[in-house]
Length: 382
Image: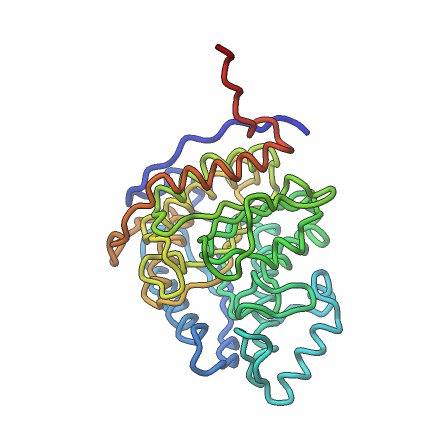
């Protein structure tokens, strides 16, 4: 395989507006489905207030300076589009289960009578966002997906997820949008095991995940780099507790940026979980609102340079409602070219020390089996 291109300069971790070319006539389309409130798992981390606060936060941004936000209610995903990732028998089983009253689908995922319909709406939002950026003229779109999707396997629910929204958006863009290469960055605190498994042998989809280790589901080892023809097109960076914003930026700069530069995607999809924020009860990576904005600036830079600006942001996790809303708002402000504020402040966690460097080195060593640029230079003999 060819050599990797060099990494891009690392943007600043400041609250400055994004410094990218912006056509003020291009709106950011936000796909948000009130029908997701029919998914009612009861006392559960993935509750309806997550969507309510996320939707309200973005609507409050609309009057502020920046690219316009256009809110749309997506249609439920069509059966033929859903079948691009999930076989019909899977969706039929879920629909029957919910119609019978719902219950526990797996150890973490609870369904109510309206859950399967909500999941089809969530998947529809992801596909609509991909379709919107391909149709133009706007080049970025956001989907407030609920339930989330990145743990869902083709025939299994897992980790609050029924249908894999990111995988559906990527595959739809290829099959119906004519794209050859799609990159997915998953920055949720939990590894996107479902998305990885779906594309593990596929060299047309670059899957990249940074996630906390140790943490559930325990997958996403640095040595997991894909299989068969897809070997080298999966990259996992396992971040230690307390990594913080700078460590996440380092992973993008030293691992994911070089991969993206060589892969040259035609669309960038972000599985945007916000449970790596320091306030979240399900993780302890210590990211901040400002840090999420910085990550988005990097990703938007990739899209602008390599993918004609095409970037889709899909909501995944995030279980502290205030942190979720503020972080999502910051990401959308970056897309709009607007100012970013952090109302929640810095992380109280201690910095991870040299643990981040070790994690990155492990991933680079694994990828070096495929990509020469990740092979560390040999020491000169004495």
